[in-house]
Image: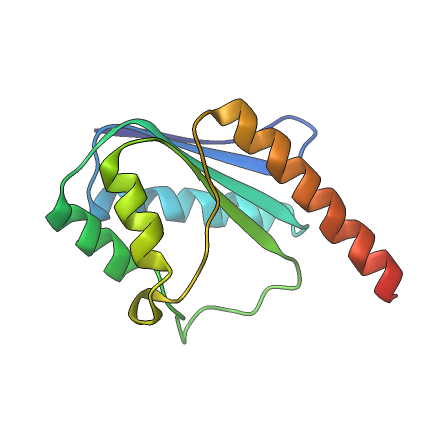
Length: 138
């Protein structure tokens, strides 16, 4: 069970890659690394979770959902937008994405892509659109 967290050079995109067995503790550790990177560069950012080499089961998906979704009352307000996407084709990541849409798990919708390249391309477009929308509103 391993993970890596890296910011793409000259890009506000953070790639979180999981491989092997994944559980809630691992996801929590990765989240701490992501938060450290987010605090360095307080700009609109994309998080892409690459799960193509990850393995988990139903029990761990439920634990991860409980840890990662929904509003955290202690979470500090951020002055930038964070867009999130997932990469993977396993039944478990699809379960996570579908369950995250449910109110009890935060009611969040996350795009799911088959490849990392597709996710990065689409999220760059989403990030550019977000920036354009902000300029129009200003």
